[in-house]
Image (cartoon, rainbow, N blue to C red; front, side, top):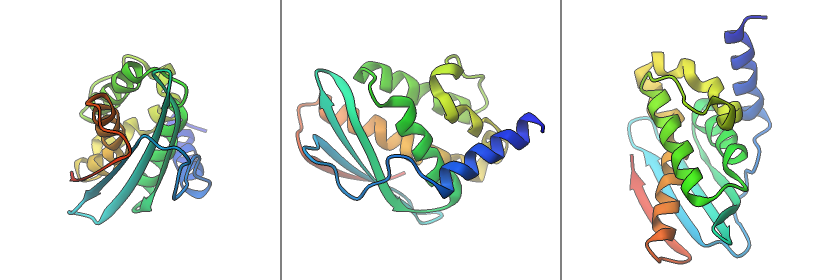
Length: 154
């Protein structure tokens, strides 16, 4: 099995059996809604922070396999990390989607499987949807907003 085939299997697994997909989160600190008006992908991301760490991150929404699988992989990569580290991973993923080699591939976990998506510019926003929602949620939390809902069209 080639690396490309393995990555496709990882993406399909996250799409078929998403991790941390839930419509609600007890004691959430931030709720953000992001959408991609070009393709119709929608995502709600809810975050709970405990002692400066991403204690829980859940997503819900509708969209293509890439957006939903990427959000699933993102939650696994960031839960338990410090807020600053979550932001850094989101940035590393963003840069990877624009063609850079990830500097923290091991920390991205299954997120690295999406590296091939960068070859398809029309799908890059799909893969980034959850990660940019995470960045927005962390920045919203750091700004002092609590249990705040923000909507963005990416």
